[in-house]
Length: 565
Image 1: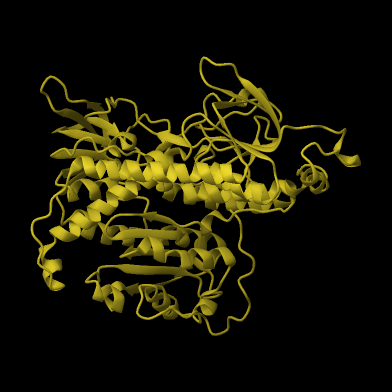
Image 2: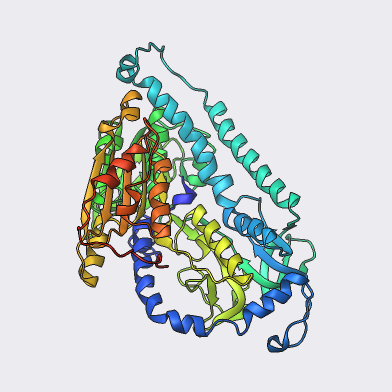
């Protein structure tokens, strides 16, 4: 439900997409890239385009600028920058490009906003806003504690669905208008790379148009991943794309995958009256979260609600309801591969993550081969061809490169690319990018989980420490009668470096940014302790968290510059 937080819980033994597509796995991949990128840092800098900065200074003067002596013969282009895909990543890149003085075009074959705005984070938040209010109104004990008396709460399914659709439409129009007002050319049609610095676009049945650009960004996003053996009919067996339309609220729905998407939809469906059954391939629910946070979240978000679950099983076959028969789900033991159980439910939601949308891009025209569908890139989002060489003037951001499948990560990558093509080297630190799950209460995180931090510490030879604070000690949370929650800090006591922060509780998605900014800026625990927080606010949960951390008395030297991964 949060395209911004697409996690992949594999639910099929023959799936071609590995489990490291989950956010947890992506962080592990980020760590691997971190170690490799450090070794290749000098080599990466060496193979940068020769005299790029001098060329770029010329470029900013005119789209058809003459190249300097080191940049070859003069060449004319239609645009400085062409972006294929107008989702959140493409939009962020386009706006930053205009700010930097680049003549920019964006090619979109569907609708502006991509998955996040039209079929992901935006409409899902509308549904979750409804579920949050319904859940509060239905909690008689909570209402009485506040001195409130509320009659039985009900809802209008179509009105709820309209709220989600109207929000998506409003945000989509806002994005479109923002680009047009700044002079970004929005070109309608599916974009294909014809060759170096050349793109064609057009609609099916209409003539194609060909344009040239000094730099090209691929930002085509992703689509729901459906394992083999699962038949999606869009009515009783659905993906998140269908579920966001809320055409029906089933009495009993099975959700395949217990990552962010599955958790958020379980919050919506149970608030609206459905019973939910989770089907998870791994032995634990919520495998992408820090284990301690996951256990607490299960106690609050799963156990008290009308939710049961099957772990350690694959949904090897799902047949839609028809001819009066229910949806039939065949479960197989994940370890033994033996048949284990059969479920009959009213509906099934496939929440097994997302797959990159990269087919038909014309990558073969520039000798680029995808890896499990993802476009290979280096730490600067520069596309790598089949021979391991950088493709000049071509970049890929967002879900299509698989580094971190979050909408805001795509936007950050796009901004980073624009910085590079306008002469300023920039590498994004993916471990500073926060993630959130908008359940009630919310879950948020940034950096490493405790197991990941322990693994890193063991490899690199340092110690880690853990600090925790409870929402039950926070005045604002208690005033709201929302004291259920925990904040957790993972850090190095020898240097004060923040390795990870995890929050479960009221407005956790908003609170995480102080920690993510601290990681991005390289701020040490002993320095952030001096930050002042308004009282009484939920932000004091983080204030107490940082103050409770114990740093070695001998620490005087700074952490240093943030390391990009």
